[in-house]
Amino acid sequence: MQLVVGRIGRPHGLRGEVSVEVRTDDPDRRFAPGSAIATDPASTGPLVVESRRWHSGILLVRFEGVGDRDRAEALRGTMLVIDSADIPPSEDPDEFYDHQLIGLAVVTPDGERVGEVSDVLHHGQDLLVVRRGRKEVYVPFVKALVPVIDLERGILVVDGPEGLLDPDAAV
Image (cartoon, rainbow, N blue to C red; front, top):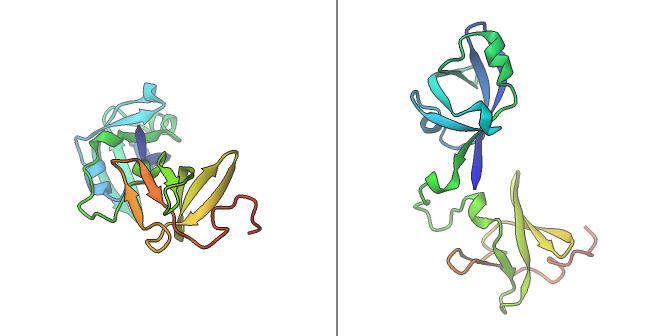
């Protein structure tokens, strides 16, 4: 599975630098000079980081072979991706990557399967999107409501108040 670590934005200056919308918690590592980064669309890459710098809170990157504004403009909108297998597991047992959660079976504390995690949203509070048939419900991703995550068994236990997992409940 490929994970997006950045999206190329507009060119900066005339010598091929581009702004990058960072979507990783470790931009210094992901965009280190010499790093080859796969792209979506794949035909655009891989791109090799020649240099990077921060300017007014924006990451500016120059890729090898991109030496002018026109070539930089041609990269606009390109997603920069890595393979999820290249990410080391977290040392914190209560920390998970989105790709580890998506696809897990959602079960009640009694073991009844009630759905599957289809997405993870990060909007102030992390929310799990649980698909129940053709409908979706949103579950706050907090220990009190999601006490068990068992990646080996492929399950996530949701223990919430009655109606939390009811897709027809009024919000």
